[in-house]
Image 1 (cartoon, rainbow, N blue to C red):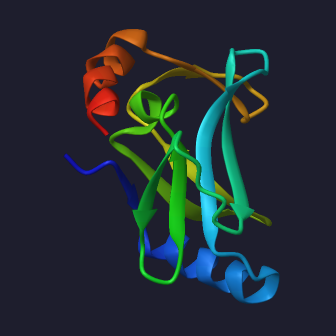
Image 2: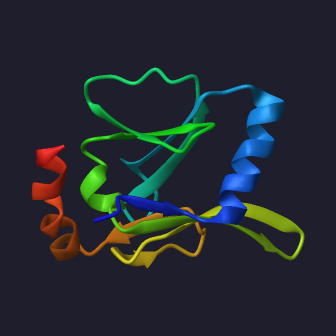
Length: 123
C-alpha cells in the first residue's frame, strides 16, 4: 500500500518553494480544530524528525508524518491546483466525510480511518 501520492504539480511547487525558503522536509498531518473538527497540517521544516514521525523520502525533500496522523492520511493525494487567481496545495482524501464551507476544516469517515490503524501501528 502506498502511504500517500504527491502529484507532479505538487512536487514541482514544493521544489520551487524549497529553493526560495531553504527547507529539507514537508510536515503533513492533522490537528483538531475548525468547525468540522479537523484541519490538515502542511508546513515546511528542516527535517526535525522524531521517534513519533514516519519519514518518506522523495529525493530532494522528505515528508514527515506523525504516527497519529497516518491512519487519516494513508491513501490520500497531495496536489497543487490553480483555481482562478488562487493557488493552493490540495489534500484529496477518500477518508474525508465532509468539509466546512471555509475550505480548511474537515471531518473524517472514522470507519475508513480505523481500517488503517493497524497499518500505522506496524510502522
